[in-house]
Image 1 (cartoon, helix red, strand yellow):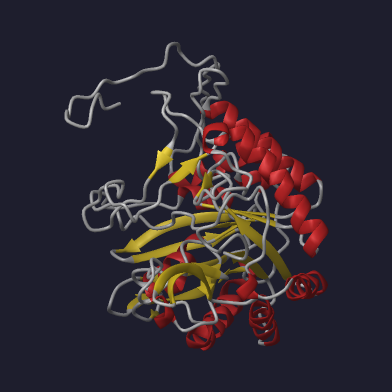
Image 2 (cartoon, rainbow, N blue to C red):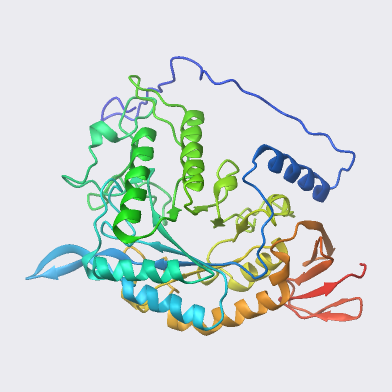
Length: 453
């Protein structure tokens, strides 16, 4: 907490007392010491603790598709800059996109619609749901929902943020002093985006709007309102959580303190209730407390490339979860190296994941959303279908199987084995690899049935 704007002296504030939770540390012992056996032991623990974790029956590769609805953009009206929504994929276009994928033979689609309400991707509070006019009418969205509900192998998730409020507008159902969480210093949890150039917050720039971390109770109440609205008004009951199950925060308001542990329990109870009511849930990253209630997890960390200090990694978490939960890494078309992400998906048993929009990527050139630089559906359609066919042909029968083996055959070459006897050999190198007389092409993978090293 800064004493004054003229001083760089800081007074640090701490909690008045220790958290009241009981901390428990558990150990599970095994006679086997290799990481595959350890992951299998962890899998057994998870299935015993969470009855929701049951073996999948999928016989085709699960493919997650994020559809971008709208973003905010500056337009000039009579010479004045005005913030308005820029439509990237209308409700009707989203339906047509899914029809094309289904018509081309994609059997198992998990589609989440991001930025479909409340101004778009950088949404206002989810306390009230207001459609983006430029995306279409209520009838258009209801038609999309009806198509998804009547199409086998297609689940539509309406994606939203609940832990953060990206915009604060008068009458939107969010009051900063009433609904925002507080830091230990008792200051309102007002946050700013991180500048990608200098890696500092943008709070010193007048044109950078803050966003807010909200109270856990406000978060849970909004989930109820949101689910009721999308179900009763548009016919969708499946929810995509952008932050629930991913971001965990407490509230240090001295009048109503909520710890992170209590916040986690609130999130778990809500996800469990949604599952019991028949709703499907999609989450991101795959925090352990959220996985048992997730029908699909996107953006799971399956690659450690960003951490240069790590020489070698093993897919411990994926070995434990495969066959119980469908998951994927980051969107292939937005990865730094799409081939690496494809190969890592094959090695770790991940599904496919893409982010699409109907508009050409060039429309985002002068916006704050240039991170979606390669999302045009038309540009990626053929590549997506070819990749889906390859994964489905080679790996489709493994997504309901446990991983029973994983090993490094050589530098840049890895082998993953499933309980049905099928193995996938992944070659990250820029030279072919000989596996028992069979060529594994450079930057590619093959599958085998049975056989030794």
